[in-house]
Image (cartoon, rainbow, N blue to C red; front, top):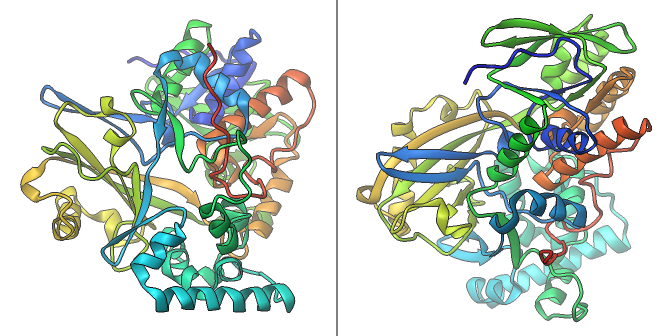
Length: 488
């Protein structure tokens, strides 16, 4: 599709058409304000897009990893329901970990753990938890790292069984070098005692909020439908979405952004926006600035690290592999970290009688997996799936390899200090708002990114500042939420 000619003087310029940028544009559109959105990819939605894989007459749909929707913000549910209507469906959730050839529910099911591990190792888990509570609670040993946090809340044995190893697999650094913010953001309020109480059904109010451990909402044809519908609405209301385009220079006077050069398929265009909402990786954005930020800001930014991902999407001549939405593989002996079976999110993601398997690898771009061909990656994973009885090579009908950089902002022990330096300088640019996982260097789910975009729109509409830092930083287990019933 030919890229549209961009307005040289847009009121709102949005860099990146991921969930945050699109949510901002959508809210502004509802108030009659048009935006110009620039997206490097040919498809909008960022990491939440849904890919269409055609194999002859057979079509498979897949998200880029599991994208379930859970939130405590009812406005977000209504926001999506207004877009998707009957496509917005409730889905039962099954998530498990696969450890030493056995499945374990996630979050932890104590009865299942006891059955799988036996009495002696289960007793060791209990003793270690008691000792950890003694050290970190009564004796007040400080929790300076992710390792401290999970050991304090689960004991050494259980922490090493399924948390420390998987976290190190994600980030590629030791747990003792990971900032405790990662635990506070993702599993705050979750510990062995709360898991036991939950399993015994203590503390649950009848008719009260329901945990999204049990079910979640999901679009009938993939999570990307949310963003496709936002895009359709925006174009209909006069906003411009330029795909296959990206910013190549951002000029400022120290107080405001005055010009942005955008490379489109037709050439470079210079725009002079009133406001800029940026959701591209914050480190990449700094490199675009002219004049460049001070040396100390650039030095801090260069020390912020990103984790990339490699994805192998397999289409299968098989009815179903498992009943799981997704499975975690904590063991470091297994090269991949997570799999998803899209058919278990929605039957419409696969042709009848077929299924698919999405395999995720966490990597740095210097790792060997980043340079492998799809045939090499398939050869790497098949011995595991065949040994576990998941599927055979003969049942693999199609193999597709994808790669994404700047997927996970790495929460190492120094990330917050460095990020504060970067943010303090960017905040001087009065007409800049930076949002989303890449834009704020913050590991957020799509609901948090949508919320950031909505808050950004309110900053513009109301002419006042809102603090985005609390978004996605709730002080309780991040997969707790409310199942709101659809409006009639």
